[in-house]
Image (tube, rainbow, N blue to C red; front, side, top):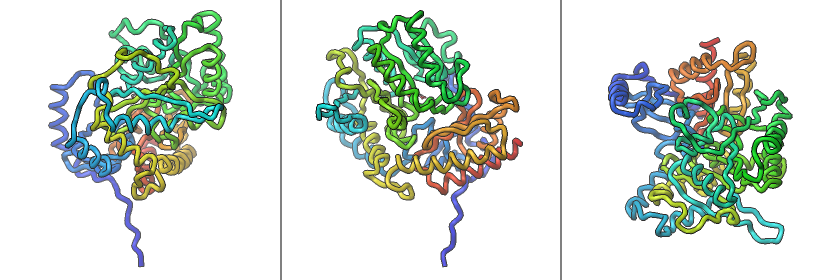
Length: 462
Ligand SMILES: Cc1ncc(COP(=O)(O)O)c(C=O)c1O
């Protein structure tokens, strides 16, 4: 006779925050930067897989992965082993000056996911620059696009997030608080709407909003920005911070064609949606079935190394033309972080299998994500304030609305807190969205636990 084991549940030993957590939070509030946001009274002490525990012994199910970073969950033995092995060899020798096998092979491995055969039978070649953070990869992308084209203007999107350094906050279009009091920012940057099918911009419809944005850019080229002064258009193929938004199918093919027409570099910021999260290595690859979408430059960070700081700028060889010494970084491509990236890729690609996650974490993200999306969509019937449930793979947004359909940020905040208090770590984004971005090792069973917590919390609000 087999006995069914009960799925693992969060353990809540104290009310949140517990006494030890409270002490750390008080010290944190006294000594750390006043800019840090502290949305929930939680302090991590140790983690295991999709579970994170605080110093009071409360164990939470992680549905946000440190903002889509902890691809392999917490303290994955394969990642820990790779880090331990590398750290005993050497921790740092500046990559800008000395090649290192571990970063050479990481670059070779990353470009395999974008290089395609060319019409003449040869392979398109790509190259990689390594940095430490998403913002650094974005800065590098802008510098490369300007240097390569000899043009200055950059077009970005509203609702976007590209990071906190000067160039990156200039490109960011999600919140004015990121910019207030910090100007002047980078010159020659414009923002256009992002084609959000749930809230179509420019008076368009869900189906036509991609074309509406492309037409808007064409109009700018006629009357406002000379297209031959535009170095690049940077876009998140699926928008993260802005609300976990999937654009319509014809948007990226149209954008690619528009960039080709005007000699503009197309940059995809894959920092949040990339590295297997949507069920493909890069989120733009979800749109390959609709036409030519290959960009010129890609930025990657977050999920690449399970939390070790490393980022990558991938560019076509024909585009990476900046001269020797023109760009570099002391720590970028750090070998310990590169070891973590290799181990993370082993699991994403399925070279190493994770128990209960099928062939690869990328496939698991597609499968468990599809199940989560279906079940969350079903909840819309019970909870009419769930105006939209959208996403792909483990990149899912729940948008809260008022009865008139406008965004309900206050209700989202209450929902987010109610979910947290039941033991599920989550995070907001956009105006009224909760993002579901768990580690890619989330099993179907743990997904069910999360769904039940969300359902109970939403019932409390109804
Ligand atoms: C799409 C995107 N680009 C860039 C960044 C900046 O990354 P980092 O915080 O590592 O600088 C983020 C961070 O949230 C992001 O979501």
